[in-house]
Length: 229
Image 1 (cartoon, rainbow, N blue to C red):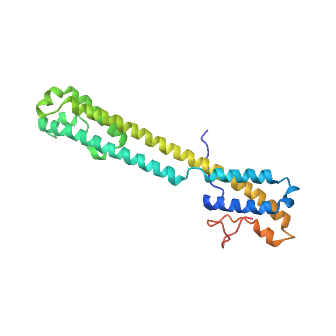
Image 2 (cartoon, rainbow, N blue to C red; image 1 turned 180 degrees about the vertical axis):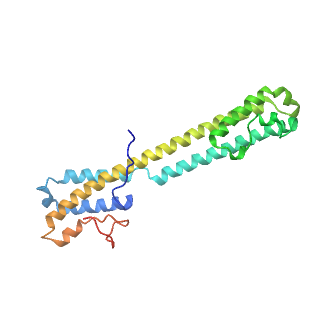
Image 3 (cartoon, rainbow, N blue to C red; image 1 turned 45 degrees about the horizontal axis):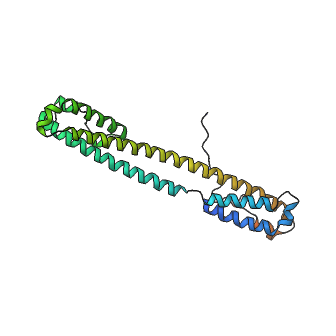
């Protein structure tokens, strides 16, 4: 069964979650005695603090996105090297047979610059296969086995970079999902603990009650929209 997409329970940034979490823990320690009869103690506050600290150390989406961009740039550069090597062969094929001939078309390089990554992988192998078969006929145009071996090597390198790109995309998705789940867990605990605090001081201490208000807004502060308290 396909797992449902994980969505964040809070509307503010992860940085704001960390800031608010540490702020509320400070208030909880200040008011520790009032929490004890509700089963909330220093051990639980320390556990939440540890979760927040570990959360702050997680790789951010910006970092994993940059890694994905870098591998994509390397993959695209290698694809262009591969196309250049293929064009070098096709220039020789055109010299021998003409670029409108059936023999030229047999290499499958039509629209080379617009071919997808998957199509380029297939085309490169096809050029090597057909080129090897016709090597004797094209030798007078300067085609050598070294040209075809270069294409094979570039194609292997390109394929490896393509795989690495897919892996990076997958890793980014996993990291982002993990981050959302851990952030949600922290937010849920904060909601539980602050709600307890508000119940304690709702009718006895307005200042302390307000210390524990959480606003689920983009800024994490009170805004014209309805707050979650």
